[in-house]
Length: 403
Image 1 (cartoon, rainbow, N blue to C red):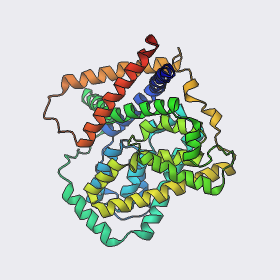
Image 2: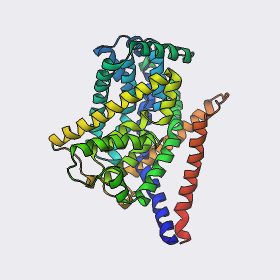
Image 3: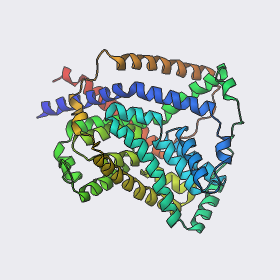
Image 4: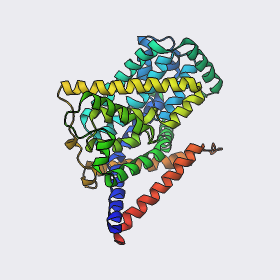
């Protein structure tokens, strides 16, 4: 029995490492594009163009979110800034939803681990999220709650040191411009490495240790080829609940979403899980409460839950009507995959490993140093869990030597 456990532990560790190897180039490409956009596109105009709620301001919020960072915590900070400076709640939330769902790197990761239907679902669903959010907020938001939340946000917003308008065509051909890209690229990795470490480790553990029967029980008869309407809705609700307690974030949760789908969870359940992973987890709820107060934070949570579940269910039946629902066999068993081969993945990974090393060295060499902020309790917990994950993986890799 102990030998079986040790072999499964080894399989879990190798699955985690293999999953990350598959996704490494996608992370690198996504963060490179994201960093270039953030450096070469100023935010001055976006903050001047999103006042009263209307098609123009919501469209601008969506567009500016699309070209901004996909990190949920960066999106929360920018959303607060927009709202505090006079943006309507709907355009600000449109920015937040777009910046965490309508982003290039997330689509690349989804394509690596799932299928093209999920990529389409991510972007179409992102638009639906914004439209449903607009409808729900317009029908339910008390004016007094919005005013109180804005005053709270203004008290919480300090001097952001906003950048001046700049000519990106001049900046893109300068050494200074690319140094900023290098710094932003390293910062992007710094923001997510703990989430990615924990997320991929959890995905490997679940893929190796958790039997399919568990997912059948959790997601209510998830093996049915054509689940009933109530099952689809139930799975779309259970997906967000599962995401709420993972604390991982969408980038780390994509391999776990792949595990769920390969174990029979419906398209709606997986999409709801992915949508919820960034914006409706407890750390995000706590930050929203700090920014706007608990009443507005809980209101935003309720709005997100309604819009995310509705969007996931609508997409499920829309894809079914077009005969586009993906089948679990397109993903297959995660532990059965061949991860390490001489192919395009290897060459792309080597390129982005070298690029990441160059950017990190350049940033460290040019940074003048300064006082680092004291990490929050949540960050310290994530760091501890990340170190434990590295220990788990290190031991798991070498276990065959002792079996």
